[in-house]
Image 1 (cartoon, rainbow, N blue to C red):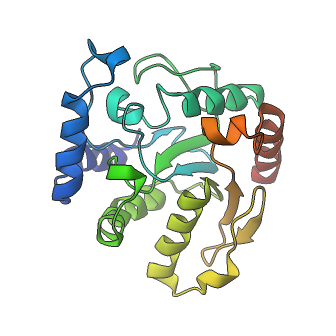
Image 2 (cartoon, rainbow, N blue to C red):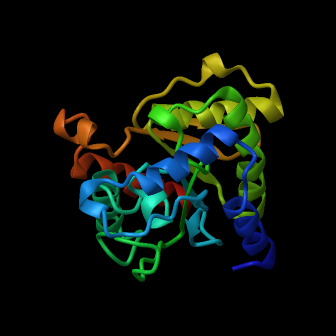
Length: 226
């Protein structure tokens, strides 16, 4: 990992710029879910991880309260993560079909995984100011991942956050970017933005998304990145 990316990770982990988010992430780490009562929660901002030379960037909105906020790694330790890693493994984009914690030996191939917001927000809803504040880290992350050519937004809210981020820089017309599963757009910096349904239990249970559909999208993304 590059020195600059390591430096950014430490900066993110020690961030206390948003008082509401700091209070909430700490509250969650104290008022634990019953099944994790004996675990020590991470309770801090989380950073991205994966192949720093990868061409594919997967982006979620924020860490989950008892997922990433507990384990210290994005999309780890909950049912959304279980589904996502099963699909990544089937698409040969990871070395394992599951992820339990940040030290479990998981590796991503040609892929980096991160969130637009680095802290868990109450009700999964960050304020505009919190999102804008965290965009500074997201921009530094994207700038340091120099080989990324494709961004896959995991869920409509993450997709909208990506559009807001680009609007801050390029003054683009966000009405032209409508979310849809497997819908793709060329961004002003020549990266391709692709929408994906969120790998949430709700979307899986309602059959909006399934393993075959998600794996098929990931395989198309892989082909596009070559």
